[in-house]
Length: 189
Ligand SMILES: CC(C)(COP(=O)(O)OP(=O)(O)OC[C@H]1O[C@@H](n2cnc3c(N)ncnc32)[C@H](O)[C@@H]1OP(=O)(O)O)[C@@H](O)C(=O)NCCC(=O)NCCS
Image (cartoon, helix red, strand yellow):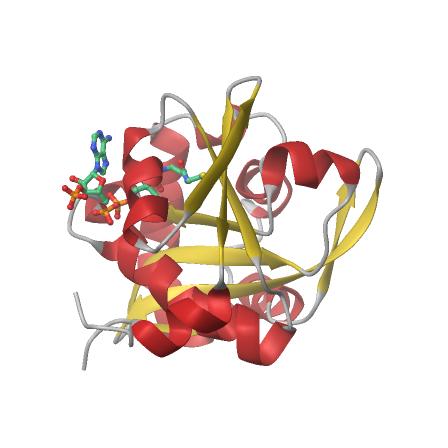
């Protein structure tokens, strides 16, 4: 079976820990405004135990409340998983605040460093669009990336992102999630 977007699951514990070590090794903990950085800092000591990981999975599987400078935004997380292997994740912010409209967008994704450049991020965003449209009612979807993030820019453009503008270092794209979901069925990587 190809990788799938699933709710956070206990089944990937070992590979999740390895993936978090990879993120830490590339300095993900110090990326400003990053949810992953926040989690690496607050959860790292609890993830290795079965109880700690179970508590995290339960929390991450619900609708989280993402604290922003200009408001708290409900947020849903899905993991990109191949069998018992954790490959990455996507987060959906259910609505935009002024700072998300300018800067962060609705959807963020990350692929573990050891699994990059194999098409996973493109497949994650493609699989995320029907979730945004059908499950969460987010449409159109704003996706942003740094102007230096060539990989993410290519992902967004491959998934039908229509460039609106650049604000500071952020490139801002809109995707019609319903149209993309009906035109581009998810293909395995
Ligand atoms: C950006 C990121 C998500 C890309 O993940 P990925 O699984 O490697 O992406 P893909 O394999 O789907 O690559 C998509 C395209 O970008 C290209 N690409 C990927 N990483 C690249 C890089 N570092 N430099 C140049 N091109 C890159 C791929 O070759 C591919 O090109 P193609 O369009 O010719 O096929 C991943 O590097 C990551 O998690 N980075 C940290 C978090 C992050 O930046 N998230 C995005 C926030 S907006």
